[in-house]
Image (tube, rainbow, N blue to C red; front, side):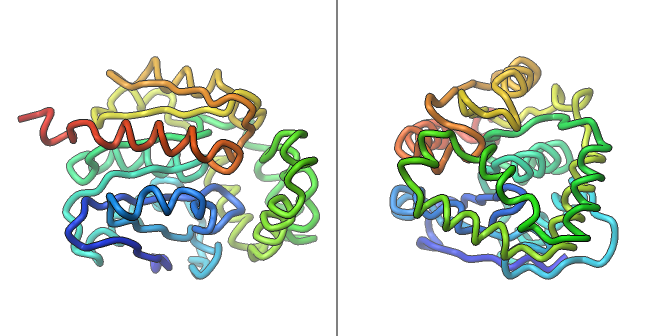
Length: 260
């Protein structure tokens, strides 16, 4: 799986991977870069069929997406890295921590869920996008991504994300919808032993705070932060609060240090 990626920050800094949501590219993290790059070697990547990453041409699972991240770590010669993922990116983080915990220092799961059913809704969205493109769902998605107040007060930013969504090729978006339809880690996440922060947007209707609470209750030792006045793209609506929580978590001991 060939994933397009960008690297910012010195090679001598600890590595941090940022994984985006369905329908966004690595530009999702622009607001966080100024605070992260002085401290970390920041690696942002695009999911298959998103941004500069080519579609894989076969059915996709979240576990396969995590396998692509392991290939990227190997390519960059990174033995270990911390991982922060939002929505679909958070699902990939869970799968990565379950499959290869020895490669993950600290984990941040933002606006995500161990299960996002029912599956038929995702299959229906995939069919719609294959027929009419991502523009056909843009209005509905933007209402879930951002609160009403943000949409009203920050129209230029909302337009930027609309253009990002509509730039995603239909097949890439649809294939990732089908990966989410297959995802159900409710019986597995309690096995995650990587130090974990769970972040939710208080007004997120796509992955409500209850989904975050389930993760925080299931993953031993994890912490939960709920960001006010934020919907699904909480890092965009509350960039300062988000990066503050992220940096506080990342500055703690790594999983290898805790095990020592």
